[in-house]
Amino acid sequence: MSAAAPSHARAGVREQRGPYQGLAPYAEEDAPFFFGRDGERDIVIANLLASRLTVVYGTSGVGKTSLLRAGVAHRLRERGRDRLARGGRPELLVVVFDAWRDDPVAGIEAATRAAAADLFGAGVELGPASGRLATRLHRWTGELSCDLLVILDQTEEYFLYHAGEDGEGTFAVEFPRAVNAPDLAVNFLLSIREDALSRLDRFKSRVPALLANLLRVQHLDLPAARSAIHGRSSPSWWSWCSTSCGRAGSSSVPPARARSTRRPGGTTTTGVWRRPSCSS
Ligand SMILES: Nc1ncnc2c1ncn2[C@@H]1O[C@H](COP(=O)(O)OP(=O)(O)OP(=O)(O)O)[C@@H](O)[C@H]1O
Ligand SMILES: [Mg+2]
Image (cartoon, rainbow, N blue to C red; front, side, top):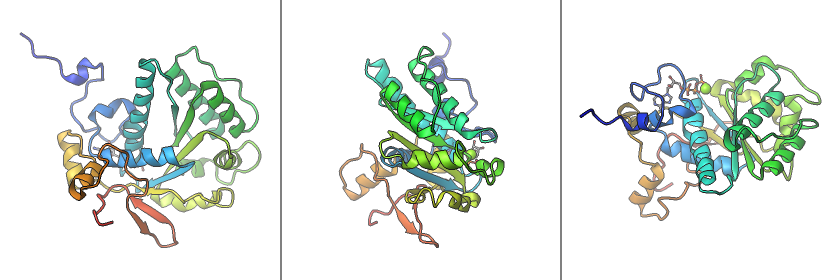
């Protein structure tokens, strides 16, 4: 009798040697092999759902893209697909964008169309794009009857390819308008390398609360690294903390500001990588 196929093979997931991805970031389809980030994923999701704009930053190679794609986007899309499979309507459409070289506004639009077709089927066509980005997004959330979560990754490349751009129709103008639009059912997450974080100052005058919701991704701590190496899902620090502290709500999403520290310059960061101490 032949041995049973591994669970990921049965589930139709592409074959992989183990939890190591090599130099490449983990993609959404690599989620079954992505470990050590459960707590960070839940914190990022909580912030993304609660705030119009979340900024995620961390040193180069710390794992931002992997966390956002194999953790955050995968988990949220999975929820949407589950709802569809149960005959319901997904309340959220997740869009991930990281191709900054060409026009980012057109790129975000194309990524939104692709995400809608992926979730609802190729028959779903969003209305023609004209006018401001905020107007288009508003129309599409209405057409789809769901909110949008737009994840902008590798934002440091925007500053590389579009240094100094400005004016109607550019990302420099359209993005702040969309973030500030009062009735828009769209939340944004912007991920950027730590050494480029100060470049976001360019948006400061147009987005007053630009850094109000700032999350720092740190290197894996030892237990999380062990999880990543051994391919086990790490215990969520929230359930760990609620067990250790006797707090209720182990199954609920952790609070958006789990552990805040003051940074020079007055911004608030959340150490999404560290377990909070129970007294904090
Ligand atoms: N949880 C994890 N377990 C094992 N390897 C990981 C994990 N997260 C990321 N990696 C690996 O670390 C490397 C860097 O990951 P990733 O590209 O996601 O980082 P990044 O912060 O987005 O980098 P950059 O700043 O260059 O965009 C990749 O080789 C990736 O496979
Ligand atoms: Mg990256």
